[in-house]
Image 1 (cartoon, rainbow, N blue to C red):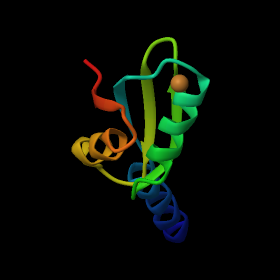
Image 2: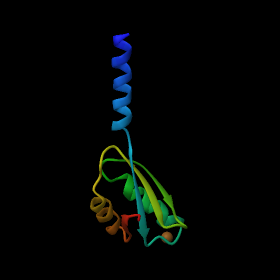
Image 3: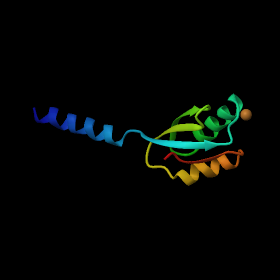
Image 4: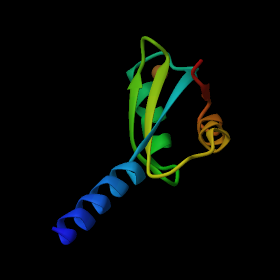
Length: 88
Ligand SMILES: [Cu+2]
C-alpha cells in the first residue's frame, strides 16, 4: 500500500515536470515555407520538444521541457528573418 502511494506520488510529480507550453505570436510568415522554417528554427532551440505553427493566425505553440526564455526563441527566429513574442 505504501509502495503504491510512493509510485503514484512519483507519477504526479513527473506530470508536473512534464512539458510546458508557450504561445507565441510570430511575425513575418507569409507561406508554408516560412512556417516550415519557423518550425525548424524553434525545434533547434535548446529545450524545445515540439512546435506547432499556425500560419494563418501567425501563431506558434511551443512545447518545452522546462521554462524557456522567449527572448531565446525570438533571437533564433530573428536570425531567420522572423520574430516572436508571447501571445497576449
Ligand atoms: Cu514564405
